[in-house]
Length: 375
Image (cartoon, rainbow, N blue to C red; front, side, top):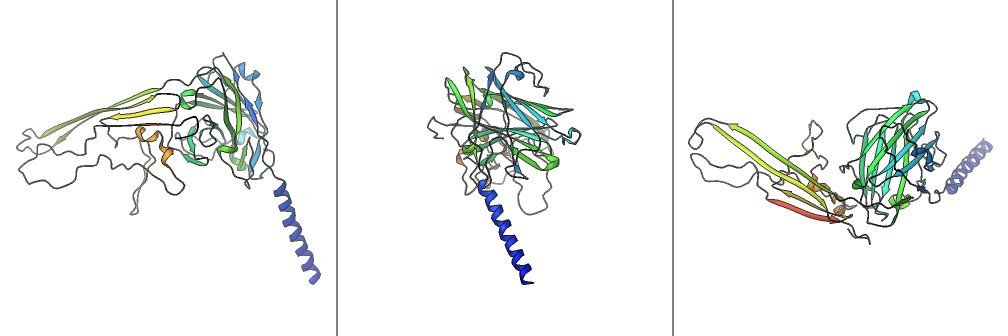
């Protein structure tokens, strides 16, 4: 009996030591570099990757698992190529799969996470090792974008104008990106080196693999990305967006002095303006804003006593949102800006004007990042 206990104890010690040895030998990939190729060919974003330029571009390969078998080679082969022209960056994915009929494709609204096969691109175009832009597409063609700030934090309310599509084939599935330079921010230069990372998820295997592998025992984040090189002769485009709005409605009530026909008409107009002074500094302005008007919120049923917190979607507040975030608490802009006026009024037979919300004439802000990294 004692001998068995000794043997079991020695076995456990050897397993623990063996595990620690394997863990100690697991190291991060050396710094990888992907190279972009300039193209003059029109790239159609249909997910088919049929253009001739894709054949000439150099592939990025060598994905390692983060989950479930950390450090091992990905169970399915992945190949990525990068093209660019004067307008945009193009990224093509060849996601080989030994069982293509088991590829998971879930169709949903933009920016919703699904249990689908999916690929992701992260670009640190500032190359400040702190900020990155994340672009994802699943096998059904649903896109998602996120702003990464302070190295490891993310803001999924950030939205960019870009395209992606995917197709399923007999050998697996493919994805095709077009990321205009207007979706990225970078200081003007003769030739660019950007932080760059790629990852792939295989839903049925619960497998997540990355191109620039970093083990879980080491610090990860934007500062551990690989590099994207080869891009030169491009300029960050001038950006100006004007989003006007108009609102009109009518109210009916019993006829009374001051409203003899029982009807009252309301109207309002205003606009949001976004203008890029330089490739890294952006002016946001709003004139006569209606901060209560936002992109359609997801319907929710609230059965408790706490208020629902919705993701920020108001354009004026999205730009530079990450600058004031901290690791200690989350800051946000309240939707009570422009709430109904408060305070008592003297009794009267009728009111000529009883506003539903406080009028805001205008607001503006200038945000950006210097070459030395000051936001």
